[in-house]
Image (cartoon, rainbow, N blue to C red; front, side, top):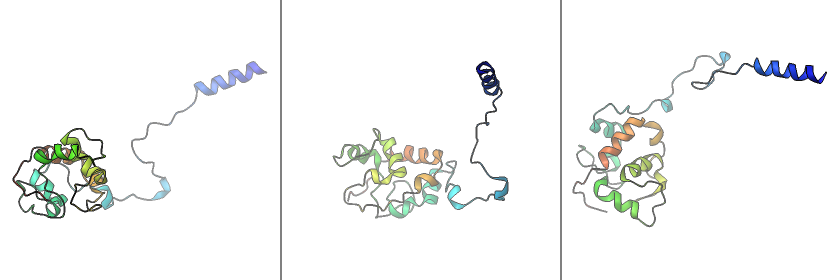
Length: 155
């Protein structure tokens, strides 16, 4: 009897059907058609020219960004990270995880609360930017900003 049980368990184990790896969310057949929502669509793909990436995302509204027309915002700090990036990483109040200016730019978009530049208001940078930028767009932004050394008055 025990032997038959073991044989049966072995047979069931060898014949088990494993679900195929999921390529995305499981959609119920009865759920009806799915539709895209604004939250699912990135603001930019990253294939756009850098000026268009910054403009479509809205960075110029709050930041001064050298080389970007109309980027004269005063709410957020100037984005001259080629000069200020290393200083920000060395700031004693910095609690983020970035070790390079490039990583700092990415972190500042994805987790803006990781470091707020002294003299600027907290909780001003939208927390949803990280979810609304494609990875390529975020890399393009970081690549551009880590080299900006424009003459912008410090606050």
